Length: 535
Image (cartoon, rainbow, N blue to C red; front, top):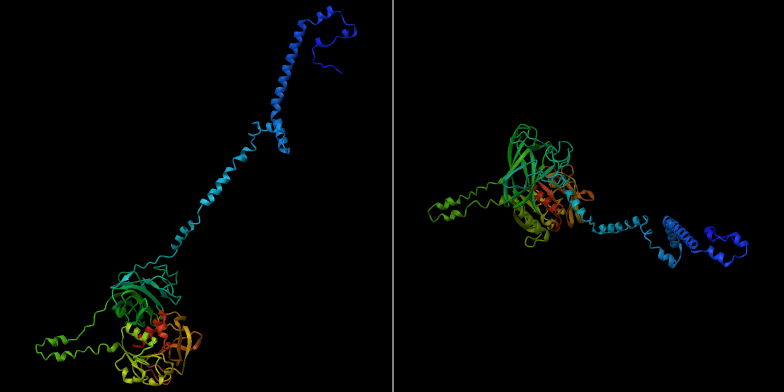
């Protein structure tokens, strides 16, 4: 075996010594003297130090690599040996940048979930819905109007077609010149810049059946004067129908008919007497002529002058003689109720059914003096001095027959078996369990209701008749039969079935108890029929 080459030469055996016989003791002692031994130890120490230094440098350089090798070995090993487990903690492995970035992102995810619960954007939509009201065009009317006061015709109430107005023609400029809540031209009542003093706008191009509504507040239920400012050239008929409603109460129609003024820009005024109720009133103004109406600027509403109660009986009392009291009984107070007197013919005047009770109360609410008479006791003379005869279907037709056929007073009835006796219809009958009638006309008797089916009562029976369709005013039919007319009428002098009408005649859809179940539209039609028949 070869000797290590790094041993000092003094330790190597000389070839001579190997070849020759061992020297004598004296010469051997001389060769291994203290000086040579010490010198060899020093060289050996230096060499070892040098080697240690080299190993240390190598370890320093290789330490990260060795650490990575060990760490990979440890991570791959199923169970780390104790010596390697102790080795893992060196700082070299922990600060490795690969793990620090992963550690820092981990906290943010925990922060994000906290935001989700705290975020309550569900409540914010409520705020976003509030602005939705702003797109609705503001209503420009200055109101509310109070009585006494002036109302401009362009300041009809808000709500649009069939709520605040009915504009049935596409011609005309519409309302856009002044207000945009009625829709773009040609929608809305037709307005134009007025030439009347004070400026502003006027209402024009009003045709028959078109209407506008105004809201006014009256201090008391009583009669008022409606003074209308208008302009009308020759050949135009300034004519309007005025209807008033307040809750379930209605009054009218009141007819405004005035002379021409001589031009579209020649302004004048005329007055119609109307009735208002205490509180809020809706006044509907409807065109009442087929030709182009007039220009209407404004109307004033004033308390109607109280009729001069000319019971000048008071002066009679001034006479000193005590005998004068006798003339005091003669004051002409008796004629006063007569002009608004209504004769109401029923089956039994002392025991009214629910429908007749409702009709009687409604007639009184409209300001009429009502005389109720039993059919069996009634006679033609009962109509004398009355403004209207109303005949209920509760009567036995053979007890009435032709008693009121020829009277020169308006007659309103709903007994179908009397329509032939009155020469008003060639056929008649009733339909059961109905709530609607079909409006087929824009005549004032339709009370401004739009054409089509209208709910007029709860489930009730309705009267119908088949009139002279060539001359009758055909207002409404049964909602599924165009030949069964539930409301029709004859103007004075028009040809009925076999005779001319001595005065206005109206056949209405009520049956025995229908009036007790009328809706507001049903009462509106009834009030309109009563007032029209009295003209």
